[in-house]
Image (tube, rainbow, N blue to C red; front, side):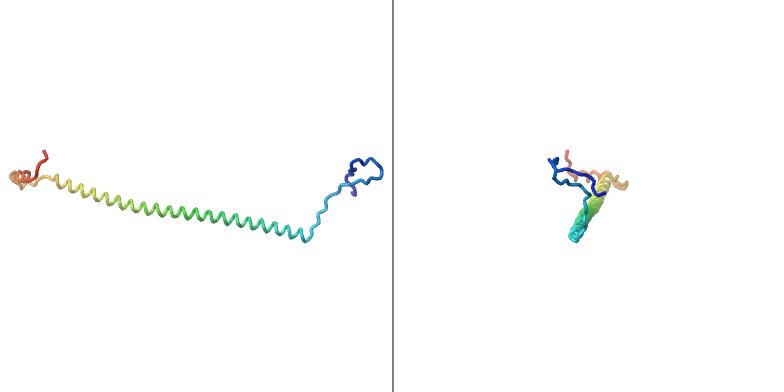
Length: 125
């Protein structure tokens, strides 16, 4: 398989002009080619490592931000539950004071004692 395709040069219809032939390209692997391939592979591996480490560090930062937010929400929840308990205790005190004010007069008191207590309290009407 010496000659695959014969391509005459332009205007080669004349006698005495050599014709070229196309053959398969022969690739030779020398020390420069090996060095170039090693450099390219090393560069690709380094790029892959940088991309992965950047991705991992980004995820770690997002995770830390979410943990901080979770801690803040937990602290806020604790503060609000303490505030709710405090407000409920204040409401219980108010209810007990109102209940004490509207308590029924014991049977041992006389009507005269009730009228003196009413006279000592100024009326708004």
